[in-house]
Length: 205
Image (cartoon, rainbow, N blue to C red; front, side):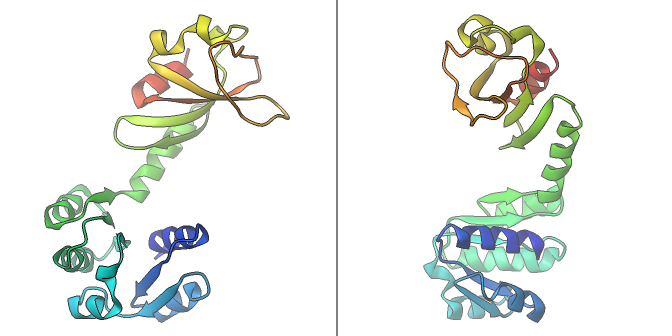
């Protein structure tokens, strides 16, 4: 599907050996030129996975979201084969709980995460937003007025707002690593890390 395909293509572009398995011929053909190997097969069948050498891979990504039974059977088969790093897509919280109990080490909710990201980006100051879990995130935002004209050591963002300014971008320039004596200008874009609630508060000052 789209999620698994996007992950697989990105990993392949980074030089990672990727084995793709899908039961849909059209999807297999679409990814054939991008991945190390793509096979049309039933990934819920443990015998098929063993034959394909799935156990030889350090990590597995199960991108089946809509067919919960197929998702569960695939994760279970991979866990039974001894894989200890299994990422799986879930369609809801109950699905996620089942996946975690049978061996998935990381469960993701792509649609939910995208919804949260869009909601945060509706804030005019927030230019980009990436949540790493339910609490922590990194955001790119327009410089809040109260810290404009001040060096970071004076604005004390970490002490006052519990966020860390990681980088600064000025118009026409590349991002620079933020240091204590970095002065913030009105049109600066900041890369800031911290808890989601603190980032929301900081972007609103």
